[in-house]
Length: 443
Image (cartoon, rainbow, N blue to C red):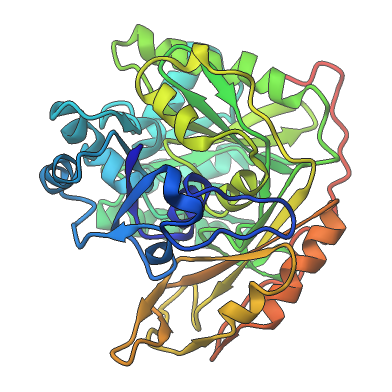
C-alpha cells in the first residue's frame, strides 16, 4: 500500500515505524526503507530526520489542504493519515477526501470535538457522557464567578487548540484568573475559556478507532503532563508514558467504550457530523467513577509511542478499514505481552522558550540497547549533516520489556546514552503506580 503520513513529530514517527514493520519484539528494530518497510511505500510531509530512514519526505505545509491533496495525488497514495490536530481542525482531511483518496482523520467539523472544548461539552451532555461540570466563560468576570463556584483547585482551559499547554490547574486563584485573561485577550479559544470542577484520581488515555459507526479501542496508557519529577512544574505536551496499566480495573476499556466512546460517536452521527478517526478519550478515574477530562481528535503524544510499540496487528490495514467504513470487518486486535515505557528528552527551556541547534549525539548507541528504539520529534539536520535539536520535545526514547519495571529500566538505559546540551527529562516516568479505589459501578 502507498501511504502518506502528515506531520513531523514522534507520534508520526511511531505511526510510520508501525507501518514499516515494527515492533519486532522486545529486542527488535526496524530497518531503513526498502527492508522492513518493503510491504508499504511510505511517504511523509514534512517528516523529520528519523522518519527519513523509513519514508520519502516531502516539503509540503501540513496545514495546506490543497497542497496535501495534490501531494497525495502525485504519489498515488491509497491512504493518507493526518497526525496532528491543527491540520485536522483546518480541514486537511476534507481536502484529501475531496480528491477521492481515503483519509484517516475526522473532518474539520468533527474535529471540533478537540478544536472547541465548549462544543465537546455540549456533545457529552447530549450523549450522557460522564464528565466534569463546567462553565463556558467569555469575560474575566464570568471566570471569577465560575472559579468561586467550583473552588480550588481551579481548572481553566483554552476553548481552542493549545498544543497540550492550554490548561492550568492551580490552587492560586490569581494564577487561574491570569491564565483566563491571557486566553481571552489573545482570542486563543474563540473568545472563550472553559472553567471546570477539579477531577481527582489518576488519569488514563484511551484511543478508540472509529469509522463513524464501529468503535475499536486500543490499549490504555498513562502519560505524564508536568515538566518536572513528582508532577511538579508547568503543563507540557507530555514528558513520558507507559502501557499497559496493571492497576486499572479489568473492565475499564469495555466500560469506556460503552459509556463514553460509542455514545459520543452516535451523537456525532445524529448531528450529521460523523466522526471517523481516533477519538482520544482523556479520562480521570475519580472516587465517583470515570469522568472524561477531554476529547482529542487524533492519536496522543507521547501515548502513541507506547501503545503502538505493543500492537501486533497490522496498523495500516486497521486504519484503512476505519477510513473506508469497514472497521466492523476487521479481526480483533492482537497485542504483544510486553510492556512499553517512553521518556521524552526535551530541549533547554521547554516548555517555555527553547533553544534550537544543539548537537544530538548517542541515538545510534541508544538503539543498540536491546528493547530500545528512539523516535524523533524536534530534530533537524545541520549543514554538515549532523543531528541537531529543532523543537521543544526532541526525542522519545521507548523501552520494552516483560513488565513495566523492565521496560522502564530499558528506556532509561537508552536515555543515558543520548547527549544533548542543556536537555531535560523526567526521571520518574512509570516509577510508581496509582493506588486506585473505584466503586463497583465504575461509571
